[in-house]
Image (cartoon, rainbow, N blue to C red; front, side, top):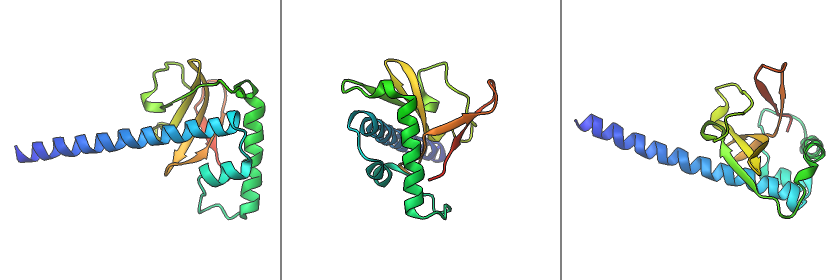
Length: 153
């Protein structure tokens, strides 16, 4: 009986921790998209504040910022219609998404993926790592296969 009570409390605490972590990461993703499209922040600012700095990446910081800048330019070119002052971004964790028409991703990564919506339409996906953006660019192998994130910064 004591073990069951302990397990129930542990599960509740873990669930609450996961919920609040997902909420925090969703807010980070929302702020990132607002800073890119609404506020027009510089790539250097975006890299410093939002990018996950992969310790295994041996490129210089200047190279990483340049690669990140190119990713930002690509994102802006693909999503020009999001550059409005009245835009409202909504972000949900992939596993808790209310949308039935999501891209398929590797199941091992879905707990760290966030879906960005505008006017109930999926606009993008973001991979998070330790409260930072690991990637917002992804590719798909074929029309039916899963999508994979690209991370160069």
